[in-house]
Amino acid sequence: MNERETLRINEKGHLELGGADTVELAKKFGTPLYVFDEKHIRNMLGVYRDTILEEYDGNGLVLYASKAFSCKAMYIIAAQERVGVDVVSGGELYTAVQSGFPADKIYMHGNNKLLRELEYALDCGVGTIVVDSFREADILDGLAAKRSKKQNVLLRINPGVEAHTHSFIQTARTDSKFGFSVADGTAANITEYVLSKNNLRLKGFHCHIGSQIFEKQSFVLAAAKLTEFIAAIKDKTGYEAEELNLGGGFGVWYNDEEPCLGLSDYADYLKAIINEVKSCSERLGLKPPFLVIEPGRSVVAEAGITLYTVGAIKDIPAIKKYIAIDGGMFDNPRYALYQSKYTVLLANRADEKCTEKVSIAGKCCESGDLIAVDVPLPKAESGDIMAVLTTGAYNYSMASNYNRNFIPAAILVKDGKADYIIRPQTYEDLVRNDCIPERLK
Ligand SMILES: *Cc1c(COP(=O)(O)O)cnc(C)c1O
Image (cartoon, rainbow, N blue to C red):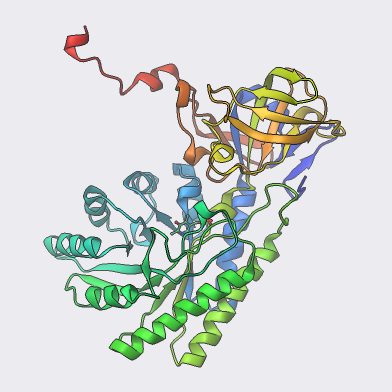
């Protein structure tokens, strides 16, 4: 286990997060339950924010990529930590706005933003919209004109950097659905196109090369390619971009196949990026651009764990042993989507030795509904509390009501205090939008 300041095993042999005994949390709030460690979230946002402050004279901004975990409390924490956020849908934007988040520090992404999402973004006064198609540039220019506004935009650029990660979470390969390619000249064309629009103000360029990336070199390469792109555009058109947004993608520890990084390691990633942007800018005679980064996963993933109760245990001798839990792909679809690997432990017997290899099955009607396969565990019994670590990112945000299971509640813990940030669903919630047409009555 990746023990750290706020995740440890206490005297009772129980897993403790943010000063709270997780077995007590399971008893008090029920399972399945998402638990978030407030201190870890604040530490992560703080280290990115302070690195820009210290290494780049504060000439930049950290955006929390809120698709990783979006709820009102999360936007409030981001605002308190003096970072911006990015959103990728009207729903995320609405949640941010409802939490009181300052609209000028919101960036909006998306490869196919809907007309109503763009209208809503303009009406909210979203600070920056990251344009990802010619069509979007036209629509946005028209909407801004109607409102007598000049909308700040960035362009999503695809620099053709291949990062070593799962192909579904690589986003800057030449065949990606995201961005304007530098290689085929589209990126230069859209730049000139947007510069010609009366109601768009081009601030600069954006790229995001993927997620769960550990190689510093991938980030550094993207920084270099984008800075070179700024220079190429300046040569061609005289326009010098003032802002460079390099996205997120920093990797996190899920299990021991991955490195376990501390706060200073994340600072090092950002320092490497900053140094590259500085040296490229100098070499190319550019003013160092306002630098934006957008970490999502690394802010919340390790801050979150999910607690379950062990139910049925099915032993298929010499083949497989399944430990079934009261959750599954409806609260964590990442194994089903990407065969993601997790670290699993028994929260009530966290100090015991692992004696067998088991697979953790959910309760949905799908054989692929698994949380982990062949993971070490002490001999589990029905009623044990199971903890799956590193579930803070892309778990709640990807959860569904499949099989009409409840999406679990989420609580925020700090110094042993625990409060709901997402309340439990009820059966009424599940039928709230159901309608019965007259002819069925
Ligand atoms: C998903 C995403 C991020 C965040 O990526 P992480 O891997 O969660 O850090 C940042 N920017 C954009 C545009 C994204 O799509």
